[in-house]
Length: 468
Ligand SMILES: [Zn+2]
Ligand SMILES: [Zn+2]
Image 1 (cartoon, helix red, strand yellow):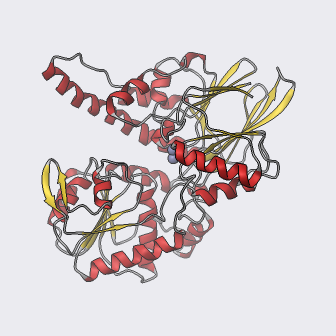
Image 2 (cartoon, protein in one colour):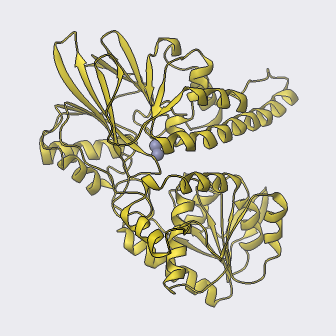
Image 3 (tube, rainbow, N blue to C red):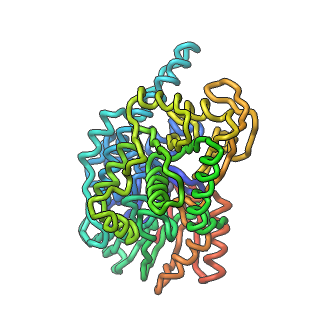
């Protein structure tokens, strides 16, 4: 049996891991690598293995760094099943199409420049049409149900608590060549304990081999209840100043968590009644998917729905408006009273959030609320650093609005939560491979695992293979 790490090796994005056993190939995830444009384009376009040689693919969750290269995989000849949870399938139906649209737009922009410079034109990695075609390959199954995916290979999903539909992958494999049974566990992305809407990550009792994420292997987050109180304080203070709260937020996951928490706070009378706008077509579409998957909700969210009469919508109440059209979005520019505007992109790099920042950033009564990790060199990061001169659409603006950072909403387990998750294995894995983390974070987590549990831990390099 052999493992090869084709992505998310010493980095966070581009999750792709191959298992070869009994003459078959199983691909775990097929994510997009997200880095500098030219490098990413090449790396994503040419898959590092032959798609036709893959027998089955298992998808841990719908985030683009795990699912985003599926259309390219299918376009290049993969004809097996892609197995994921029901919610992941439905999120992919929205998110892969959106990604296809982004790929097309991106290439349009690059080609405009290339044409001017007399350089050859490039093709999109895939189009919306390719994305749509790839959805035919998705086959879904619920959590905690075992199913044979190849002769002698049995798959079970557990809840990873990271986003709607996110899964821990358990593969019970009859390794015919080595005459043994092997349990391989892939953590996928692991969430935090106590985060709203979704359940806490489930634990696993035993494993022989473990492939595990390490995003925050070197960092701790504040506990989630503090984040809820922080949100309350920020909304109340901004309201008292007569200002608006502008929130750049990822359309999938973060937006729904914020909406649900605001709904709860408003119901409890902890925040004043003020209009809340979700201004992102992708967020509107994915919120619809959330509504149709109550099987993924945690006990608190289920109780919240029951308390409101069973028919209640955790993502909709009288104060909230979802805006889809450009006209509706533009109308928000003329809003004068206190309000909350949640919009994408999450790092304020593109999208409608830029218009809202442009219109609101120079007013000291307003607050820009940052609720997720911000990559270096993004407008979001510059706001976190509280820079006073920022550029939006190429124009300079003086930031007078307050900036607040809410880190408790993170979608990823921190160091202590990762260590505790491994602690729950009654039979510890013989070998553990750390992926989905920068080298520093992975090294720090490897140190913790060795010290606390005496485990054998490896941090694979890109394309590195292991006989296991
Ligand atoms: Zn993820
Ligand atoms: Zn990820």
